[in-house]
Image 1 (cartoon, one colour):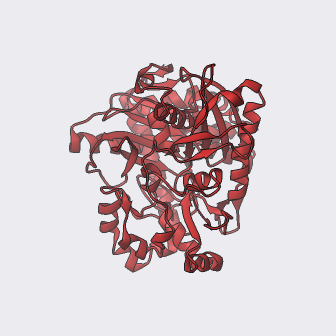
Image 2 (cartoon, helix red, strand yellow; image 1 turned 90 degrees about the horizontal axis):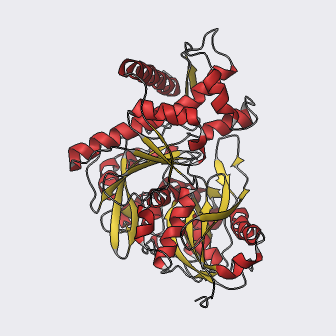
Image 3 (cartoon, one colour; image 1 turned 30 degrees about the horizontal axis):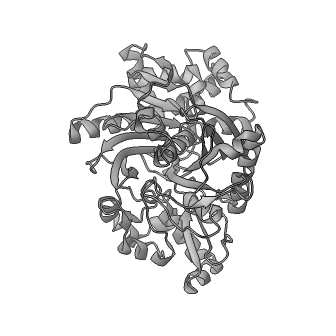
Length: 507
């Protein structure tokens, strides 16, 4: 362990997300005092396959820590522990003996497992999969991606036969890399998103591993989220090794960072995709089709479950406007353009660029723009893209609200939000209006990484749970839209979604 220091300890948070890696530094009071980030490549081929280079991610994790401590020489000596927050469902394979990746990571957005999932023998297990894992059968979870790796990459199959294969999500890969192979482990929030873990026993399910062609021996042991996962100096970025004292999926990290420790407390993270998540307490509760059960975290042997819905493209649609369509030069432009758009235009944009996630789980749906007229200009298109984020979140929150109320008598009275898109005042007001709920925006947008850091800090004895009870609200939005307008807008949105699904079906 790191030696006792005479000055205030600091806690490090690593947020390894779809678009890049951030290093966050928290002081002894849990306040964010510094951060750095590095992007990584989005490797996309003509088939729409989405991949990340695991070596690039590992390099960036260490370099972003190096960037952070270069801001102040005292930081390096004062950092006591680190928590890891990671993109979920993204999965990779590497040699157990060397740690060398055998293929790029397949990103959660990638739908290459759709053909396998559509097979009759897999479809016949839908009910078993739902009952066992809490998840809808879908290629967006890790299992079908592992199937593709096992069936299409000879080196991976050979490594499995030689008992020299590790398969895991980004948390597992980073822990393995940062500890130089000393620790091979995952934790329940990430494992619950593989579609291979029994959500009740928190153990890998042999029947599902067989169904998805996964060698169970290649999967990591499942530890508590606040376990001691080993020690690292980030390849020399720090002068001493520190404890890796938490690992968690980014969405669950944000729920924890928001202080949603009680049943019924709900948050939305606006990232490339969006995760809408409610703390469901210590038991798996029944939920409607379109949302799923997952594990929030397991601390000190106690498991917290969540109800969740995931959207494939939420704030990622803003990157699409900028990088692919060239309609904007920066995300900050979207608020002004949306506010300047013609209120009479009824253009709707369904961003099914890689199918639709919750509540539809339709991989065939295609991105669609409907309702265009002579009133539709760049401003209206940008507004429609922003609106699509709020509409998708609304659909999922409404399902979670009704499920929780019917199954557990729990209601949602406020929605906590986080992520970069929360700085967009137009979007936040629309979200409050469509949900007819107040929205709380925290002072810090980096809740995923901060949640992981706080969990690590608590496990390491620097913080207590009382830190999460502090009010960190920066802004609050209250509903202003009348019910008739709200209903009209939602009706047109649902018509647009139906068009996107119909178009994808080829009918």
